[in-house]
Image 1: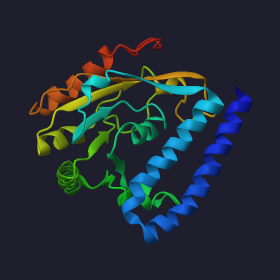
Image 2: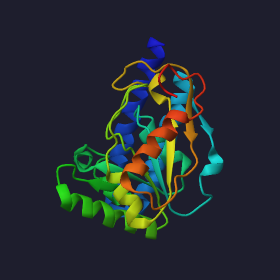
Image 3: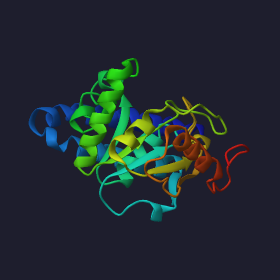
Image 4: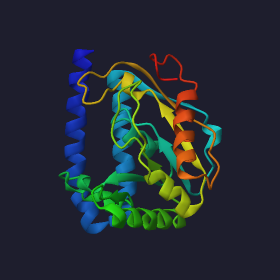
Length: 238
């Protein structure tokens, strides 16, 4: 496991550096291809993760995802894996991301070109209005929006108060919210060097009805995560 983890980490940083350099060409000559470029990067990373570390996704409840068009996904967030996998599972994903990530060298400047929804978490009411406006725009473009309501990566079994932004987004576009549970932290933990071989389960729960009040929506997301049929989950994960 140690050698595989070393090899994957080298692969991760080398691939990201090389494609990050290639991102200059995308920014200058083909900005409309930024999303496709990010999806290509994610496919290579997760393919390498499978081959080197033996980690692979198992998608459960795929029937709850609409076949096309806009959607709003509220996912648990335990690992960097969660921010990669939806780039490979959805045709035109738009992540809700903190604005500071734009400052990451090489890949950061590509995020707005890829249509990601950037949020200033210290921006107060103005940031919330911006979030609603960006959500309407993404839905009008037929994008699949992915938000992590916990606001940061959590460890398996850890509970955090959910951030209300997902409720503002749902109200702005009157879309159902699709809760998604995961156990990705068991294989690729928060800030963890080791990558542990085995499946990462991604459980798509039945959608929550559009128009729910904020408190009911947040409670419904947490309840869906808790009740998700998570094979081999550690204690406290449902």
